[in-house]
Length: 383
Image (tube, rainbow, N blue to C red; front, side, top):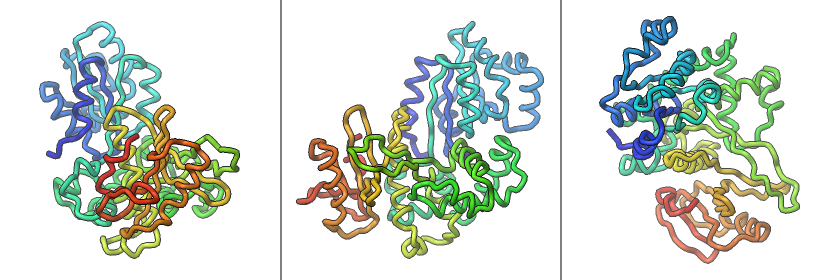
């Protein structure tokens, strides 16, 4: 088992909260993590139809089987349990509930209604680059394989894993969130989203290409977000007296999923693919999000772009500190990598040494134009 960085945060919060909720995409390792962290608690999967039926028909009786607490996996299948869990933890300060789920929207809706103030919410994404360590030999391979645990602990080829993963996701999560009549149209829509990685979202254009209404496109994007397939990177709000692009950009939580949707069937195709730069950008942004989640935080990166094409790929905002990061897939150093950062510094009037270029090479170094960071050394960038 590859040790998960989030484990220490889970253990720490369990000393302070009676209810821990761990969300994240299917097969990101949630069950493995909580069972390893809480080996003395019983484990129940609410995806099993007979167990789920008992929990739904007799919630009090079901929960009474676990007087000292329980791990309830895929809790979004039985949202009725939340109000009963609330009463139990209010009456018994010793009992511990560990809840996991793969639908953030369904979970958070119920948590806000019944468990607000009683629960710590954490997010677990597929392996981070730090967690994989020596298992990664090139970023092209990492982009293609993605970072889902089963790819690594069961050595499943990505071309076998991801089509099944996508189909299972559609059959389970999508149908649970919304009754979509044309599943093939939904999958095609998801493929179109993969082709727009790193681009400002134009909802009308996306809907037109998918042959659906703009309202349907908006609804389907929300489904993909709430089930951890993709996310929208929001633009930075400070304009510095410039006209800015205000649409969010689309990215996927895992590049392996994106590659499968794009029809990439082998690692070598990544090298020649027209979206190689966008996929590399997606990979690096995901690492910053994982770093935040693994600390128990929920700080999201931003991007900045004006209407003249000047752009910063990633802004890490921590209070008054703003760290600017440009992301380049090239492996050869070029001074042109720093042009937008120099422009940004002149506008933002921020201290020096808060701008970095992450690139596809192996060496991190200080150059005359700025700080160059290898994709392997992201820990050198503060946030």
